[in-house]
Length: 367
Image 1 (cartoon, rainbow, N blue to C red):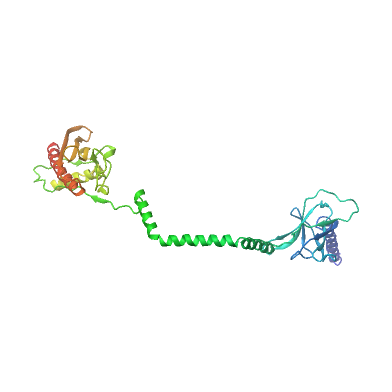
Image 2: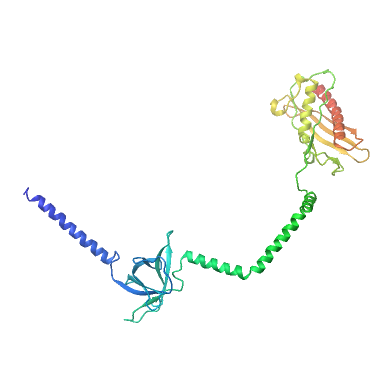
């Protein structure tokens, strides 16, 4: 038994291999492409560059066979005869369209079949005629297109020459009048407000320094929040009453918006009066004993009657509980002989100095 066992194993292996070969042949014959085939004669009325025996045949994009024979038509050397072998189940009709496509980057040609409804009579040999130009490659199509463009250019050489001459005349005219064109464009920029914007000139409000000796100092902590004001005063522009633009003030800007500028210069003034007890902004100080609330009523140049600078402030002092312990309205004006930025700023400095002296004196007496 031990001697016979390997022969049984070898015999089983050989039998399995034979069955596998028969199964593979059966698969090829029924589903692998070597099933029933039908041959068709195809005639191309022109060159078929690159088409070889064994090239694929596609029906509606599906491979159904291959080219089995190629040759020149003996009665007309311009024609090419081909024989294709396709699966018998392929619905090839006598009016099926035949073409040649070039696939992939290398342009491998394949025969294409498409459509058809007319069934050939039984026993009648079927010959398919390819469409004219079916074998035309992309290179040949490009050559034909260039040839047609060249023909159009030749037929219209006269008008094209005149058009180019007109362009040259127009460009020469532009070159001769470049200076005038630049002047026209510069005028348009000025008229429409274009071009490089003018540089704005910034002016600051000066803090008075000679406030006299500090006869009395602040005995409690004081904070000065940012003053309140109507929207019109939330600006860096110079304001006029009546409102309007004035020559020379188009590029004028205060160093900050009017409320923030007034707050900063008020704190500076208190520091010049008594640096040791000067108030700070609310955010710097935290919870102060008192707050000096300022509402800006006027900060402008009045031009009705005598031209003058006007500053008007409403001041209130409140304690930690929000109770108003004192309030006062402080107003002043300064005559303005010449309405121009430098003179206006000097007048604002003088008027603001009087406002500050009165406000500091009243505050230290109250607090």
